[in-house]
Image (cartoon, rainbow, N blue to C red; front, top):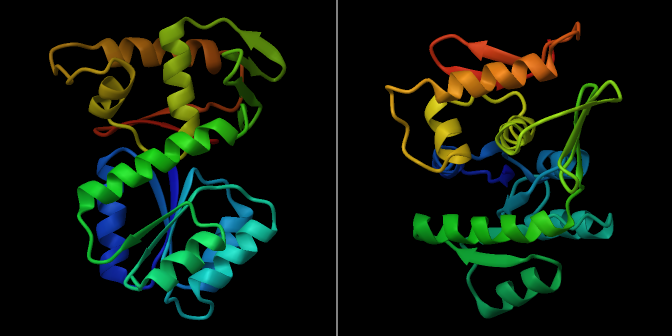
Length: 223
């Protein structure tokens, strides 16, 4: 998932970013309410984690702007303000969940995961990177308007790349996500499928989308 964390305490923000990235999520951070609001309004996120006591603009005002705009991105308020009145205000203004600091990280991850499943119902079914288009309902892929024939496993791999564009994906992460088993260093199954997908997606196109990151893994990006 792509997650926006709006948190002014840099140590807390870094802790959340590292923990979420360990769960294979793509994380962006804003350290004040104004920049966080701009990112929330201009970007597409699966979940927004929002502190209330922020510099420049408080979290409740940010939340009001998000909801007034019509955006339905799930928002988890993560704050030290734990009174009943604070919780009621946050939820009434459109937050989907409310977690008080200090918190157990396992509970935080579980709540983010739950909100991510909820966001999956409403988010767009068409994903795009450059001239590549992916329909997550029909499971069809097109590049420059031309349909690409994919197996179920190739489609799953392509969707994973598209949802994590500009992010390095290790062979271990790909293996565990696509095949749902621990990576065996003695197999080259990831390389085989990435090469198959690359031949179908990038063949005949000037702009290559799937790139090898030497010593790290693979990345989908626009050259």
